[in-house]
Image (tube, helix red, strand yellow):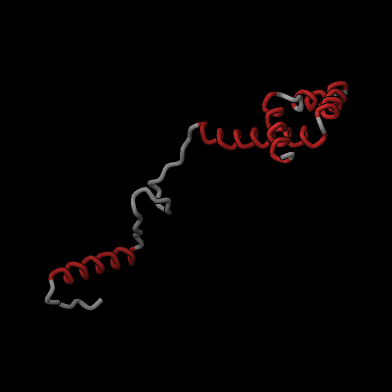
Length: 119
């Protein structure tokens, strides 16, 4: 960059800063604002176990929502018959029967869907 002397001292300061930044960029340095996610190695990942909590909560909420939709769609009697059939089975069918039992959250979701769609 050509160094020019301007009448305004602020312009001299500005062009001096620009020259320092260009010189640093030429050396391979980068500039990032504090708190941003960039390529610098100053940002540290969270190593705690809490990062697995959010996806777990989402999966559980989706499972409960799916159970509630199935309960609403097939009806309470048929749903209970199918769960009883799973519980009478062998191996993983029993686990599925235990997981698919109509709990309070499933019944609440089913009742909410009934209110919304039957109005």
